[in-house]
Length: 376
Image (cartoon, rainbow, N blue to C red):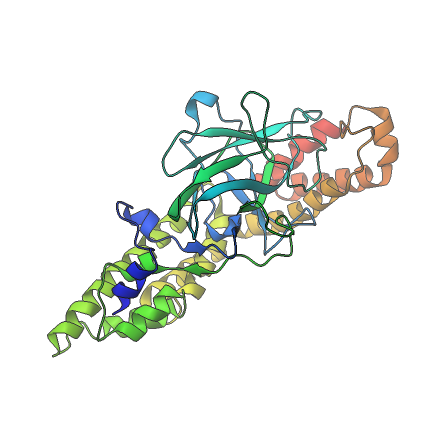
C-alpha cells in the first residue's frame, strides 16, 4: 500500500497543516540537501528574476519590498521548504546569495531571516563584496559564526523571510561535515517526493495514481482520472478517488487563488504563476482554468503594458548587474565609479527614459524614474 511505503520512509509529517503538506519533501543525498528557492512560489514582494548571471536553475528570488522591521520578522514574504535528513548531525547552512541595497549603495552586510521547525527566527546575513554571487552565510549573534544547526533525522521545515530590500537568494544547501564540494553551484537539486499531495491514504486500487503524485508527475492527468472514478461501483476505489481528488484539487484551487490574488499588485507574476499551474495540472479543469485566466489577463491593455515594460526592465537589471564597482562601491554619486561605467550608465539612462516615457503607469516605469533620479 502507498501509505505504508511513505511511513517506512519516515516521510509522513504529523502535525503539518494543509499548506505544508502540499510541499515537496527534498531528500538527503549522502549528507547534503540542495534546494532551489524557486521550488516555492514567490510571496508578497519576492520577485522571480534572471538579470544577474551566475545563478542556478531557472531563476532566483529578490526581495523588492521595503526593509522589514526586526519586530515584524516573519510576518510577510515567508517561503517554506521541507526536507528529510537520513542521520542526526550538525548541518551547515549556506545560501547562494547576492545583495545590493537600492538606497544604501555602500551597505556591505545585508540580511534575511530563517527558522527551522517553527522555532525562533534567526537573523542571517551575508557580507561583502556587494553585487556578486557568493555562499557567505552567517548568524547575527555573538562572534557572527557561519550558519550551522543541529538537526535530528527525519522531516524538517525551513522557512525564509525577508529583512533587507535588494537581497537575492538563489538556492540553499544544508550539509554535514565531510561532504565533498558542498557549495558547488552545479550540484543538481535534491530529489523530492510529494507525499502530501496524495492525501492520507492508504491506496490500494489507485496505488499507481498515488505513486505518480508522489513523484510530482502528471498531476492534471491523475486528477482527471481520479474524478472519473468518484462514482465507481467499487466502493473502495470510489473512497480512494475521493481522497485523491480532495487532496489534489485542494492544492490546485489554493494555488489558483494565490495566483489570481497577485493580479492587482504584480500582474506579470500572476501570469507566470498561472501558466506554471496550467502546465502542472494540464489535462484537468483546474489547469485549463488557470490558462484561461492567464489569457484573459494578457488581453488587458494595462497588463500588456506591464509585460512589455517588464521585459525592458529586465534589460535594465542586466545593465545594473554588469556595473563594475570602484573600490568596492557602486555609488553613482562617486565620480570614479561614473567614469569607469560611463558607457553602461549612458545606456542605462537611455533605457530608463524609454520605459518611464512609454510606460509611465507601470511598476517598471516607477522603478525607472527612481533610477533616473539616482543616476542624474
